[in-house]
Amino acid sequence: MEMSSFRKRILNGEVHLERREALIKEYEYFISIAPKSPFEKLSLSKFKDLPQEKKILCLVLLLIFAPIWMPMIPMLIIVMVCVLALSRGNRSPEYEAYDYKKNIAEPVLKLFDEKMEMRNYLDPHDLVDTDVYYSQALVDAYLINPPKNNATFDYLSFGSYNWKDASDPDSFDFSGYKVYHEYKDSDGDTHETVYFNGCIFKFHLSFTIDGTVNIMSTTTTKGLLGREKERNRFKEIKNKDIEVIDTENHAFAEQFDTIATYDKDAYRYLTPTMIENLLMLRQHYYFAICIKGNVLTIAIDNGGYKGASQLSFGSITKPSFGSGDPTTFINSRTDSVRQALISIYELRDLICF
Image (tube, rainbow, N blue to C red; front, side, top):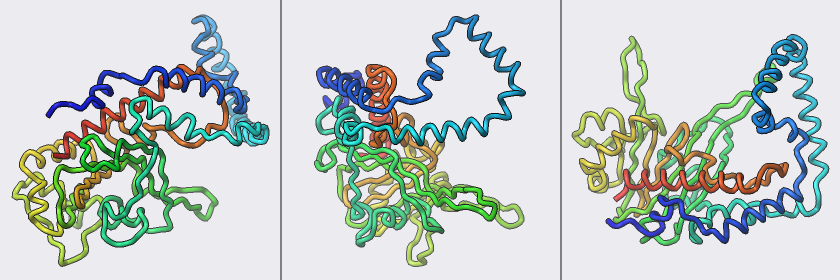
């Protein structure tokens, strides 16, 4: 199949140059209205610019006076926190009213194409038929490990391309996602139980199924008497009416649990080529797949897929300080998005048809 013009532009690193120049100027304006970091003068970039002999002298002095400054680290941390807290009150009205998502974060995506968006489609009906919150739909679709406590569901970054057009083979939706429960022990120390910490990708398939298909990575655990057994890494299959589908591929059966409303749907997707692709992907990642209608959702735990990481598309949260070189910043964000797009389409080509 011939590659689309959009994907060719991504591979060639092409962006809209006029928009890029306008975005650099916009970031310059943001720096001008944002508070200045009180620690900007201590930047490591300034240390890098020093002559080699001065760098060596600084390191020697640090080592010599280490017995003096190391005990002061806790106090320095407290001072830094206080300075940061005080600086938050020194914000201009222009900074407070500034829409970072609209003016900086999303326009970086649109350097590649107008159809790129920093928007998340939280539609649980892509995963399950019942009316539930999207977080619960992720659990019910065997895509994340069910939390055992009151958990927090955090979107770290997100982006999509033309998702509303289900017939567009380039359409996708992406989320950096974390599910965790934070608590304090009897000593007052803070701990975190993580149930999912990775990325969720959504693609449109070239066909539509009637029910749902769920494919989940398993992991080897030690049972009684040291016997090894395969355990579903995501949601445990407890419903006795649901049988794990036999693909007659021993390696696949060892590394995945597959369930489906209708067996024919699972067999339609799990062609010999697709089974080999999933086994290849499984060598490096723990993941789960849910297919419903013509939407394939894949959740990859413990990170993302190559360049498509949790923060690839950038945060919509407005930075507390304005600093750095605008051109360097925009170039860095653009490259991060480009690498994410390359990885997303590589993943799509691997698991979709």
